[in-house]
Length: 246
View: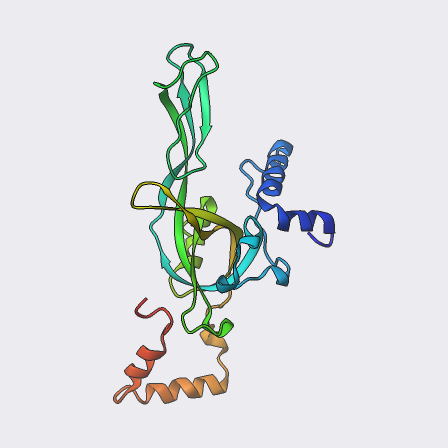
């Protein structure tokens, strides 16, 4: 995108949600794609952040994180829009569900308050992945973690594989603040951080067994020769050591 317009590129990084809505609406109005979803990859290096370095100044910005997936939730439906009918005048009222709590209309244009009938709801599939800083990218022995939310095509049967525990990924998304619920029922002044995921690219590629070098073949044969002694122990301790016991 930078090759075509530096101004647009800077605007995407600073106001990603607004620009994404405009771009997706434009594609839809042009009739090029029925249900467009704009995904960004290879964003500027200065937008790459460690989880440990995230601060309030980064809120609502487009960032990328190189991290390791620790846990992945089940895929579950979430309501994003609900339509209600006013019993008094029959008006259909649409309410976007942008908060955790289900929202109903406060009033109708006819003056009625409350008692609205739920007519329909629009839902999308969602999931949550816990991402951790890569140990070789931080001096902190206790790598920091953050919740990243996925939805729509990102949780398809094929794309969800990129978020399996142990995968090292380059995740691009928008940093958001999440209210913390107190035991008293109110909200804390302290906020948690989370990422609304836009795209994901795996950092590791699968090993092609047909293209092993002579040195790699030699190492595998040496390990295989130890199977009767401590070979299994070596395999066990070297397989995803950062994920083991999470």
